[in-house]
Amino acid sequence: MRKFVAMALAVVLAGSFSASAMAGCGTCDKTIVENAVAAKSFNTLVAAVKAAGLAETLSGKGPFTVFAPTDEAFAKLPEGTVESLLKPENKEKLVSILTYHVVPAKVMAKQVVGLDEAKTVQGSAVKIEVKDGSVILNGKSKVVKTDINSSNGVIHVIDTVILPKS
Picture 1 (spheres, helix red, strand yellow):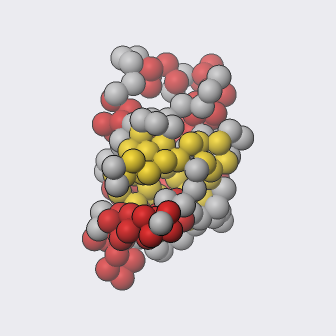
Picture 2: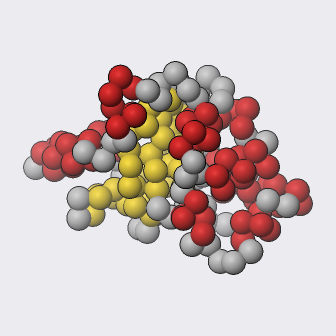
């Protein structure tokens, strides 16, 4: 039964692919960072990745899976949080938060739905559950778009920034 539910959810998630990620895979020849820049909805994430010195790494060979928070997801953080994290003296904390959004492997949606957790580059595991037909990370961040293929991995878009336990 669990396998059937996972397969059914994978079909539902497939419906949320972006058109560019499906037809001819217009995103496959670009890195994760290039696709994030081109999407125009990850400006805060891109700025944070650059401030943390991770742009080169996430443009590298990979493979990586990035649970990418949108600009709206970052806007949900308490006022001043992003600005504070972008300061050079908070680089270590910023790196920890960003690498908590990255899994050091290419994990497609059909695989994600079968996982209870995934170990991140940061070192901690992110909890994964399927709830009401959606993939939820750490009990609060919903995956809203899946399988944006990149030359060095895949992006899954999330609606809330996930934070590692301190």
